[in-house]
Image (cartoon, rainbow, N blue to C red):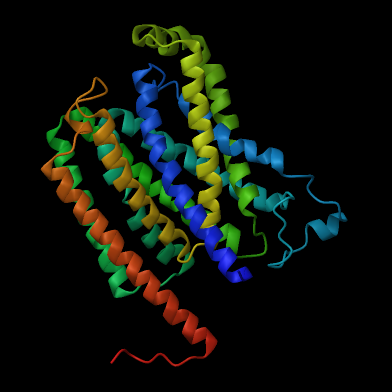
Amino acid sequence: MTDSSTFTVAASLAAALTVATGVTQPLLITVAKEFGLADPTAQLYMFFYYLGPASISLSIGCPCNKSYSDCNSSPTTTDLNENEWPSGRSLLYAAAIAAIDIFAQSLNYTGVSMSGPTIFAIIYSSVTIWTAVYSRLILQRKLSMFQWMGVVTVFGGLTLTGLHSFQLGPQVFRGSCMIFVGSSIHALGYVVSELIMTRGKNRITVRANTAIQGLVACVALAFWQLFYTRPRFMKLIREPMKQAGTSRQQALFVFLAIAFANFIHALSFMYTLRHFPGGAVSAGVLKGLQAVLVFLTTSAVFCGTDAGGEEMCFNLAKLLSLVVVVGGSLIYGKATEVQSKQQFNQKAGYEIVPDA
């Protein structure tokens, strides 16, 4: 197997792990809610959510064994070392993205506790749209007509979901709006992450970017737990746990499951963002696929249980939204594949001959 094929397999495996672990996240938040652990003001589950990627920092060695000037010189493509910390400016860039992502993910996962995983799944697929728009504005990445057609199709499915959520009551609708805004801001983080990992003098490695974003978010949420949640711990956490019949061991298991799932998700996602064809926009399409799987899994596991009402169940309106979203993602994915082949042939000096 050649280095190129090995690299492609690694990128594909990372993409698969990104989708698989992404499916578990909203489901685990739903379980945390049922166990009395998901108070939206305490945000304790979000602390463990970021604890996973923050732990990646333990695998990174000392900043550099070279001289100070060598460490702070502009890296070339081959100089980037996953086992070393990057320059101070790169760390600041990653920390700024972390601040953006804290706000975005707090909106998203508070929204999922209000509207349910199925509605979250479909609205979260708007990441595809926002990554395409932000990639065009920030990375100057051109999209073909068929790529934009796929994006617009996904947006059509999103609109259908929004209209349906409005009929389910004000809380579900507010949660849906929070997810919509959170998805947009989260997509912005994708694009800026790709920017600092692939372009400019102060590029950062996949591992360091993941670790720094996790560390900054974890520290910020730790302060929130210390100064807000701790004085109100009995009311926000312990009393809901007693009402749900949740033991401390069960609570710890759920929190550690959230941390582990996001540890795998964050690392595989950053690798996908850095190495998978299409960069941030393709990552957005993977989020659309993730949304479909969350939709189907939630309906199978939680519909008809005490975990929620109609927002957990599969119905005709959601099916229509799902078909539109999947169709748009497939259109976009095929258009991206065609565009990548054309760009490769042009760089190699081949003449592109149209099919007969």
